[in-house]
Image 1 (tube, rainbow, N blue to C red):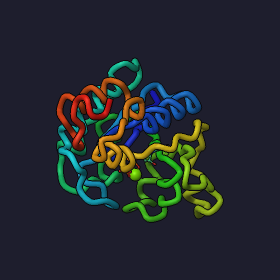
Image 2: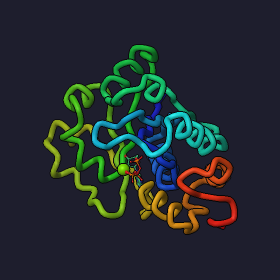
Image 3: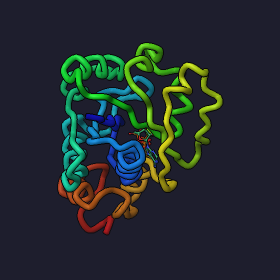
Image 4: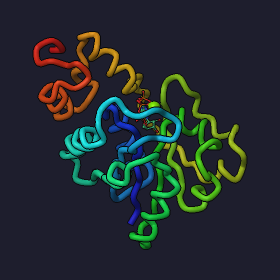
Length: 200
Ligand code: ATP
Ligand code: MG
């Protein structure tokens, strides 16, 4: 069985994440994609909303897809989330699953700086997708890393969680930038300053 891990802060989860996962599933014949919100990512500060809320939004986002699941390990473990630790544990618990890790172009370029990247690259392959603002150029990666990265085509989606948080705080609409069920969840819980009515 082949499983792609879609990791991220998901603060909030948006259609760029959904399309990246679906593009990787389709292009690489993945049986499932597991969406895994991180607790505190190594390269960022703490998310704007709680891990529990980011998990719940992720669960809403994946709920309609038969091959998408949510993985709560990093949020439940707490602390800084190092992908290498999580993947080692995944391989111990699921020795027969072949794992890959789905990343946008910004993260592909950043790969050499990932924590214990040599160790991680020995355990899985990466599936890189296009993202506006970052060229998807594996030629700049060292050869040992380049050979672990496959590319999946996806339509360019110029949306980020940062944009969504800013728009929501400014009272601008974010409808359709996130899956409908996520939008409803956000309005219900008044996250990021969204209030029912103001962002319609
Ligand atoms: P933030 O603005 O808070 O950094 P983000 O939109 O970049 O949020 P993350 O949770 O940081 O979202 O990203 C998780 C993963 O999804 C990363 O590998 C990132 O490259 C990828 N990703 C996010 N948005 C897109 C997009 N619009 N197109 C392609 N990949 C994306
Ligand atoms: Mg990001």
